[in-house]
Figure: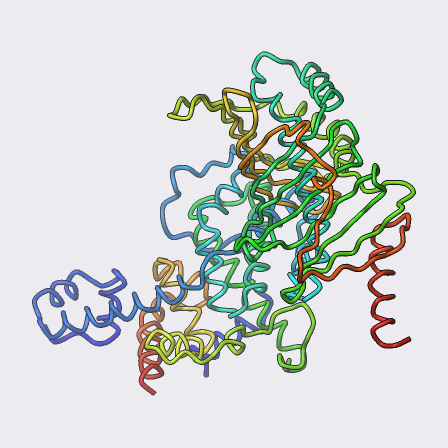
Length: 199
Length: 365
């Protein structure tokens, strides 16, 4: 029996679909043109979407350094995509699709390593979840943030994508979930977050 | 129509609902309330994610470097080539980080000298050819005379405590004679270094745990680490870079303080850098009265290491005969600890030798 959760896990375990051909669902932006210099176009898109993409990765990975790594890799793949005359329609959706795959890669990569005890690590890299080093935040916003971080990865992914303004079709493309299921999963993710807030 | 399910309410909030559902949400007070609540919750989540802030300023620089390395070779960017961070992340603050500030101060001073010594001649570049700029810049450096005092703010990547204020005094007639000091945003001194071949003195100051430690070395044989000379060595490289930038943009502003020239070099993506110094982008605000640069922002690479620097000139003057020996000395305060050392050819070695020798004495060895 195939469940939604099962399909998500398959998405993690199987080789990822090529990011070069994500589903494009909205009309192409007027400013996009393959005749532009790929490097200049990549930098322009970084200026336009870099911050939102970083926040998305940060909320999914819960780690600043990993989030920046994924953002950098995403834009390098974009450069490669543009240099090879890839599809330039709806590059925002393309970027989030590649970034979501990158976050899954990074999450899966973490699982290959032994648990990391942050308190014993005095090297240069920050702990996986930087929040653990902070003092407990008992404010309403603190509880909301804690509840959000406690959500399952898929719930965090869907809510983060939606919070960045992606449509259901774009969310489906980025997350590997059927479009018809996105609304239901988003509603349930939000309900779980609300329950966590009051727990 | 029946009341909306949670999924339909979510779709209304996300703008993905059918016309029928939207019409019902408008008409039904209960459903409208549910839509409003869910919309508030989604906005709360969006604000939580937004609170994660912005990526560090170094990210764009890292990206530019990674792109430049792969720019001419598109096929290099593959699943096996693009892996992880390309630079080390910052270490946690250490009590000894002040020692590292010496190099930061030296770098800042070098950049400031390039900025205030060379680039003013580029303030009116529209009628000059690159070779004329090079020639005039070299003439300016070589013809400088007297004692010059500068004060400016410097902000660089990695300075988590905010911009520092640099005060420096340079004897243009004797390039080994200088003093450079950096001050934190709260006004306390962070580091200082001075060298006076006339009196054969070299001093270094470090502020550690609220106390100033001054390592003073006398009878120096050969002056070393001349920041002005380092700056002069960088001049030719800087001019060479400026020669390559043919797309300088000049803007003239007439304000209450007089005319200002704004020279900008649009961001470029360099190929793999093999040079000592390379500029990716630069912006200089130049006074129209004396063509001295008031502000300078630049990103680029030094020895293939990325840097981003912002310099703002506060004061500049030639003090001439007002300069005394004290102008090139670090004068200890009543609570400062002074360690006397022996001269060495390497200032770092003489610093470490002095400190370790003092440590040995304290332990009774």
